[in-house]
Length: 178
Image (cartoon, rainbow, N blue to C red; front, side, top):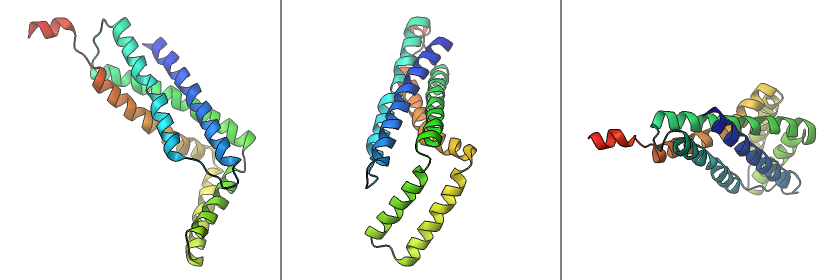
């Protein structure tokens, strides 16, 4: 199980991290700071589908085609955790080394977008205060780690849960005895 978790987790993490760097780069270098969250999360779901194949591979090659929901979910969650950890580590390096002003650019974009949507002066002041608080929190690497995990790990756990439901299979001997 460890080998499958490691292989699928590392591959999943590398693809997730590459996608994240590409998507952030698109938004960061665009004057309008346009990114597409829908495409980003859809890509995450597609990448996390590797969890399904990792569980299936282990079930079919190591467990003679049978796996409990619990064992499948444990494996899927571990794959998701490894992939998410790689995503977080790459984001930390990318953020601190290549885009340290990312939050400043994002704040300017949020305030500009609020203005375009007709925000009042009071609304802009409130939004500015909110973004400044976010920037303060983002100066703490621990917060950066937490917020980055919260972007990706829940998606991975949901995919692991669904994959486990689909792939659970009782051994043939138990089925035949009933």
